Image 1 (spheres, rainbow, N blue to C red):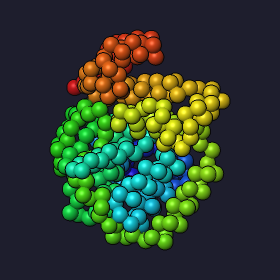
Image 2 (image 1 turned 60 degrees about the horizontal axis):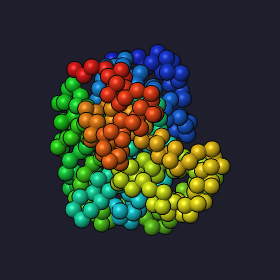
Image 3 (image 1 turned 180 degrees about the vertical axis):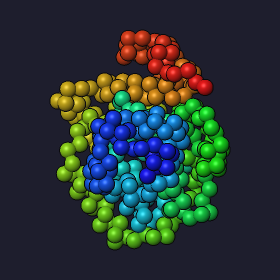
Image 4 (image 1 turned 30 degrees about the vertical axis):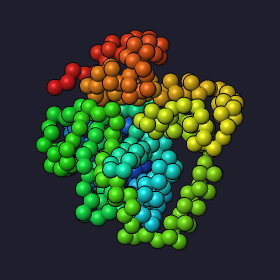
Length: 322
């Protein structure tokens, strides 16, 4: 639909990406996150539509988020709804995590990719922002208005499409992707609240999680990606969130062939690549957002991960901006 409306035949693009259109007609057909990102990247290349993520977001509804999306609609209030999103989106989305930071005045609801080798991250972040706007307006009604939007991407060539569709202060080259809004909306009751249905769906989500074989390493990466934004990636904090003792966490990670330090480094490496490729953030800004004391420590770590300096990696991987 969307690709066709942009003047391109989707069939050859899907074939090139290893898909058939029929695979997308079945809502239960799960497509790996990285594979889907490659398809999205190919669609952007063929359509030359930098705003493809915005269009996909506009065509999406909470139902596309699996059971987490259904929980959103029937939760008693906005805070409970967003907590459900944080708890259960990973049953549907294995490549990124929702993020929620709040204080007395402002709340930041966002999305963060943790899966390495993800392509088209600019479009995925655009899509996530539009989805967040749709979610919040669905929960709060038309009176809900965001304060500002932060996007982990460079400004697009055509800003007018973004200004027309998002209609709020936009901050490109941000270290995170999120929509900021007044915190008092968290207390807002949800108009379609249904306590019995919410309890039933939550139990179903918990049973689904119990039957799903999610490794501790995967859970850890998701938590680390969320905690990286809050500068709280310490072993004691993560073990507490997982509900286990630090020694137990270390022992179980060892059994899976990894360590807490290795996983933290992997998440930092993934996020640093996103920031280097998708934004103009300085090395100082990137090092601080990854929890390093200074850019020298980040420089040494990145060279250990990739074999080259972050500046060299950026120069080699990033196409010249327009």
